[in-house]
Image (cartoon, rainbow, N blue to C red; front, side):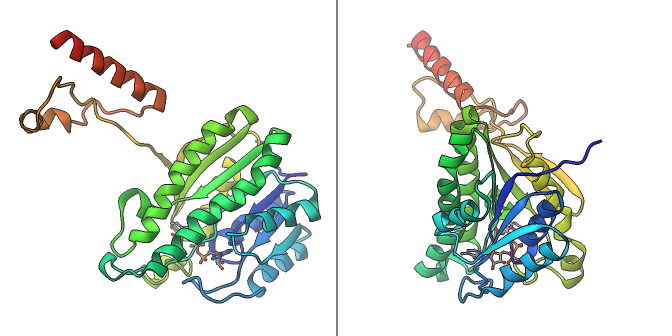
Amino acid sequence: MSTLRFDDRVVIVTGAGGGLGRTYAIEYAKRGAKVVVNDLGGDRHGTSASTSMADKVVQEIKAAGGQAVANYDSVEFGEKIVETAIKNFGRIDIVVNNAGILRDVSFGNMKDLDWDLIMKVHLKGAYSVTKAAWPYFRKQKYGRVIMTSSNSGLYGSFGQANYSAAKMALVGLAKTLSLEGQKYNIFSNALVPTAGSRLTETVMPEDLVQALKPEFVTPLVVYLTHESCTETGQIFEAGAGWYGTTQLYRGKGKVIPHATAEDLKANWSSIVDMNNARHYNAQELMGELVSALSEHGNSS
Ligand code: NAD
């Protein structure tokens, strides 16, 4: 099988100064890409900043013969990050939205600042960088986007109301951008990684943090953003050497014309039956609703 190369491709990896992002940046560079290593260099709670994290990764890439440039802007300022790509490398092909922080606290004790900072870095950040790259993607009819989601978003996570809300929002963003981007050959997917890092070291035992190497996630990001990959609008997971996909499934449900709350109670087992559940796209969902309406007509 031939190597998946990224020669002449320019990649922005946000939050690439450590953890998962660092491994992506290094791998892209190994495969010939020119990489913008973005990192604000703050702590895991989103306070403080420094240039050293991004600089270190750029040095590592250059020492191995690769091409990279550092950018220290917060992901809220996507235009500046994309400008770094354009100024240094003349184009932008791939955006890996990876930067992240945590402000874990139970919902009752959550402050507005905890909510706002999480939304700013994860959701506004991914929006901002992707939005700034979008006109280039459209013009060149090529673009690949990764939105980093989380199991906390898909399933909920105690103490992470802010983080889980932002991470699920990124699934919606990835899906809508896949619809809007498809005719321009812009593909967008959501990634659900699990890895040991400074974000997870507070919630995982030390041996698991060491064992769950970020490098296990890297091949999925690389493949999803390669020109040969046609996946878009999907959710993919990686961790511990396991790779898979997660989809939203909808049960068959039941049409109950002119239903009352009591009718729903009486039919609840059919309404929540998932035996014949399947994945739908938005058009199919509307088709189902239109056909439900026609059943109303027949029964009235
Ligand atoms: P990490 O803390 O090692 O990496 C995140 C990086 O983002 C840091 O280097 C940090 O300096 C940078 N960053 C933070 N705020 C920034 C900002 N405003 N602008 C630019 N850079 C900023 O953590 P990680 O585990 O490698 O996480 C990477 C991504 O994966 C995050 O989005 C995280 O939510 C997500 N994620 C991780 C896991 C996991 O198991 N590690 C699970 C689910 C999701």
